Length: 184
Image (tube, rainbow, N blue to C red; front, side):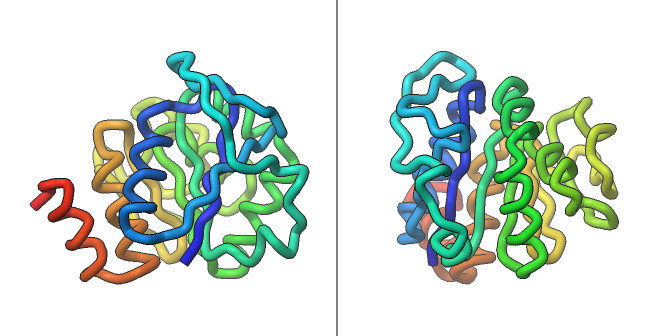
């Protein structure tokens, strides 16, 4: 299994790192991708990171060879990602192909901008729900609805990621990772 982790300047540091870390612990290949093609990305708390790939360098065929995608929150990052037409098309194509689409915190707004949230249940950071065209599940740590997984906030990053792991690789692998981080 393999997943793309799209991010840009202003995305929430810990949501991004925790999710990528746990996916890799689960032996899920996770490629970090600069959605706006920068060599270095400064997260919401000004941590400088180096993405492993740039969106412009990935062909549509290569992108669609992945089993899912992940988008972290963070106000400025989410605003930046919402303006990326190619990313929005990729999200739509993944959804329409029944591939995993996951987003946490404010990032479900990006999924909504891509036009995939109508009639789907979701959770998100408090106050952002009005920007998502879907069925809001208030105060849920995460919500799984068909091929869409959403998480509420940084506080729920581990639970959110464990659901992604279970979705992609099964409950046994999820439990193994949970046990390894003492989440049992």
